[in-house]
Length: 264
Image (cartoon, rainbow, N blue to C red; front, side):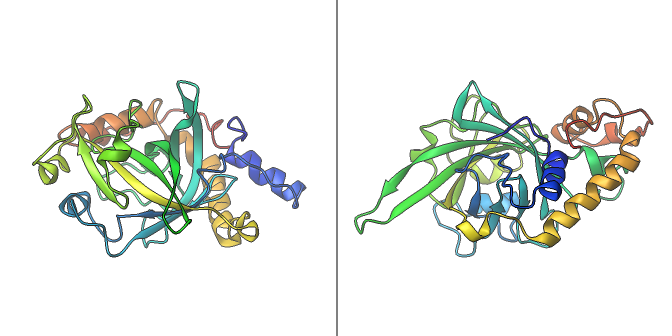
């Protein structure tokens, strides 16, 4: 996969070469992922502990980096960056850009562009069931506080600690927060690790829906026109604000140039 190609470049290549498949994501990341997040807060997910979610939320990813989560808010966008962690092709850092993100009340407008949550992905070996069917899954780790990916998560042993279709909460030292899962869900020092079933894209699905691509392209056009309002290190400011006890750091709106090289 081509991790150095930006999403904007992928769109331009698609326009010039409609039959060309631009693969910015590895094949094991692409497809439909069943998550336990359907209409639930993080605290609700913690309360599912010991029970597989009856209703799932399907997150779909395409080779060019487009994604759709099939929900009403923060649902569509593209992968800004995906890179190997410690040169391991099965352990990846992923940074997301939501094209339909609306800053909450009180947030500066520039957070529309700087809100790029990061997650860490770990490929889980396929399992062959007794009936011969193959189950594919991945581990996904994200911080409860802040938006940066947790570099040292998930760990391979988490595949045995986190049941398929569920999430567990860990301390920063990697210890499972036994008996305090619900409280851990609101602790900014917790890491949430989820094990999710993965279904590959069919050959006919390798191109993302046109309306999804059009929405992402419109976001990029807006970013190119207004991205200069984002302060230097805007993502870092947002990460620290969300990791701390309040969002006061976000109230200082400033006007500085901001490179859009990682998008266009």
